[in-house]
Image 1: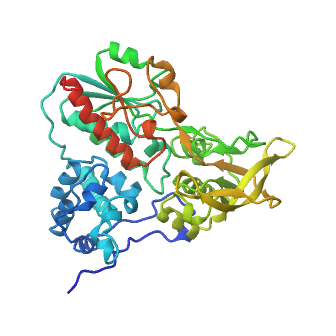
Image 2: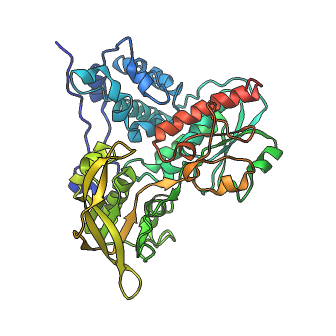
Image 3: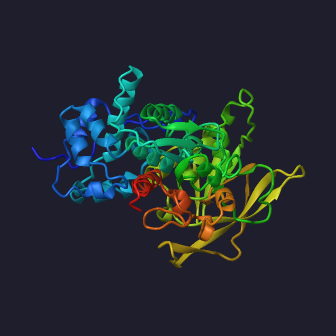
Length: 466
């Protein structure tokens, strides 16, 4: 019997049910489903999937262990490269990375690597609930302290590798909860927050220390950290400063950045107001501006908060949307109205200063721009007004400048990203950086890859080899 060319589908909450709750949408593989999918893997000798993974998980090896029902060995293999598989198995764009180069993709569906990773990770999380926790092996203590700024994917990944090497690692987080974008940016229905909490406990067992409510650059500076005995510093603070369009009316009440909207809802439990003291406007007709994953998250969150009609306003066509296909499909299934080739030009407010309309213009696509996508061009005379009572702007982010402004000699580039060399080292001796703070907004897994690379460089630096 030949290998099944079709991947095993994952069960999901029905759209009509899930759009009214914050429960996770995909339900995960059963043992039988995971085994069937694992059996599709060709175990090819070239394993391009490993090179396609930013943290270089030995993918064929862990999939083989699933076939053999040796799940502890499977998670041990994953943990060699990635201590956050329950997270990456859910939010990583595998279709553009490991799965994009899977050999099976030449004859049928690529192996569902992310779903299999989630299956193994969820099995391990269940074991942790029973008190069965296996911590990766650590080298003897080196008695050298390293500070990690930011507890998002880059910082966590860097901290994990350094802790395994025997370094004394402390993560400093500006918010009251750890996890960075995993906690405040990604909605509960895509990444349940209990998983992020469990991973924090796992890191603590590994020896990583967490200091919350410490805003480096205000509470303490990098110079002061090094004066306090930290011999190296890694900056992994991401790109959390929202971008706006700077059009008339953008300061009206009822207009949020996606960052503020999602942070209030996810981290500060605004959806439970007044039980949690974080008020947020619940719009009935909501326009979300943008076409990336954050825009999809914001639109789907607004729907779950009780919006009657959610418009996703995007200046290009569906084909050019940077969001994951899965997220786009989920948004469509849930009834989000896509207003493509459309862009707002101004917002109109009522007598109390709240937004009541978005004036938009229709667009057409011209020649390709620097991003490789066709450039949107306004169509003269095509303006129209859209009745809305809430607008969420999700057109991208840039790094917060606070660290750059308070760290003498730290070089930054366009949009405030920190400049690093091939070893992830900044212009300040002993200070390294990686993730969105260096590249601009990207993915969880690419930030983790940068964190791992920086950890290897920090180890060399502290051993006097860099």
